[in-house]
Each structure stands twice: as structure tokens, then as C-alpha cells.
Length: 385
Image 1 (spheres, helix red, strand yellow):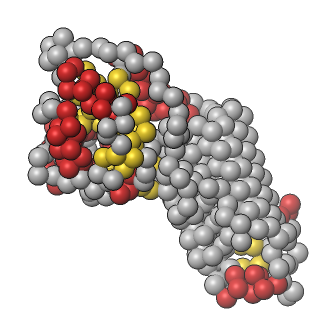
Image 2: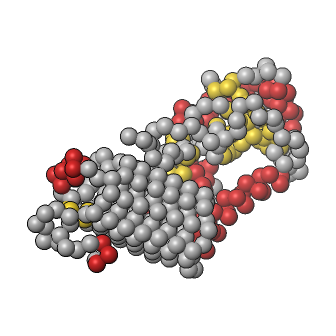
């Protein structure tokens, strides 16, 4: 079966045990009565905040958002600043087969502008490595290699989404020595990862990156706080967002990233969600009647009690999704992947794309079909429900 809606991998990070202790104290100090209320105040999904406080990996941008709200240094909470801490970084992609997004090999480096920090006399640079960042298990080891090549002032201070994109800082002399050795070809790899590029960062580029992160959460707040009927948000990143109860009827969200988003009871009637990334999203009780979900990725999504009457789920990936008590009457399911989906008491009927073999399998797993002969609801078509 054709794999629906390929997913680009996301950089995730885990809080250290010491970091969790500090975060718990900050939560109390700032007067948040509960973690759920804290999540709501920041427009972050409850499950994402729960994972953070349970030392489970979450997306880097969400990790930074939580730490910022708690007035904490995210690097300290992640344990990056701890000399004895092995960096806990992984990839969360909701599937298993997509390459990382980032600078392509052979791309020409951008114009380099050196900006010196007048207080500490340091500058910053970005090093792009080729490879799967899931394999990077100890940033301190890579930092040690960089220091051996250039000087002891070099520190890894951040990691940005993309390929393996390390943000470093150090003295102008050490950074320049490192740049020269990379550009001359003397340094071709770091800890087994081929070096693609090094860029000296300008103050403006760092500021722009922070603005890009902030713009995501401003958009989340806008959607959560106001009516969003019929708005065009194609391709936007709304992952980990709390959009529970949001009015998104007729919204254009094709290609949008809504992975791990909280969309409980959201109004998504006739929304355009084709090729949307909804893996691990909480859509329990959501109204998706008439929605276009062609090629959508709904792996591990929670659709308990969701209204999917008349929705188009052609080629959608619903593997391991929870469809208990959901209503899929009249939904188009041609090419849909329902392997491992929970379908107990899920309402099917008059579905195109379901053959007798698939119907029999779904019935054995607890699904209810309205169009079965003798069924008590045989006469009810989706238009009459």
C-alpha cells in the first residue's frame, strides 16, 4: 500500500533530571496552579507539557517555548551546559522513512559577516553536518573535537532544525581558525559526520531565527483566540499547539504540520487538510465532517468520538489511530491505511474504497456498518443522520 503523507523528521530534546527539578520549582514560583493551566496559558498542547515534565523528548521549539515561559535557560534545563551530561537528542517523525530537512550538499555558503560580542569578545558560527542527527548522542564529544582543531574557547550553544546544524561561539581567532580549516578541506568530518558548510553568523540572522520561532506561537495564539473560519494557512507549522475548541471550519490547512497538536472538539468542518501532518494529534470529539483529508498522515492520532461523516480519507494513513466511537459514515476510504487502528464501535457505512475483505476485518475488530443487511440502522444514510 502506498505510504501516505511523508513526514520530515523533527529535532527533539529531553529535559535532564536536574532540569525538571528547576522547572517544577519555577512553575510554583510563577504561580501556575497546574501543568494543564500552564499549557493553556502558553497555547501548548497538554500532552507536550506532560512529556516535558516526564523527561520525554519533545520538539526543540516547544522545549524552548516552555523554558522561556518559566524564565529558564533551555540549555541548562536540557543539561547541555553540564560537563557530565550526554546530550539526549532524537528524531520524532511519526513514520520511518523521510530524510532530514536542511542545507543540501554542495550548496554555496552565504556571505559571511562577523559580529563581535563587545562584552566577551566572542563571535558565533553555524556548522552544518551531513547525516541523521538521531545518531548524535554526545555533543560534548563533538565540542571536544572542535576545541582540539581550533581552541578551547569553542562552545556549542544551540542546535537548530535542519540537517545537523550546530551553533557555536568562541573567540574570533578560534572561530576563524576553524573556518579556515573547514573551507580548506583539512576538516572534512566531525565524529563521522561529513561537514557541509560553516557560516559566521551575523547578529541579524540570529535575531531573524528567534523571530521565526516567535511567529509560530503568535499564529497559534491568533487561531486559538479568534474565529479562523475559511482562513488560508497552507503549510504552516502548528505542531504541539493547543487549538482545542478552535473554529477552523473551511480553513485551508493543506500541507500544514499539526503533529502532536491538541485539537479536541475543534470545528474542522469542510476544512482542507489534504497532505496535512496530523500524526499523534488529539482530535477526540472534533468535527471533521466533509473535511478533505486526502493523503493526510493520521498515524497514532486520537480520533475518539470524532465526526468524520462525509470526509474524504482517500490514501490517508490511519495506522494505529484511535477511532473508537468515531463516525465515518459516507467517508471516502479508497487506499486508506487502517492497519492497527482501534475501530471498536466506530460507525462505518456507504464507504467507497472498502471491499468485502476489509469490511469483514473491520467488523471483526469491533466496527459497526450501517449498510449491512438487517442492521437496525440500515435505512439511515449519512445525509439523514
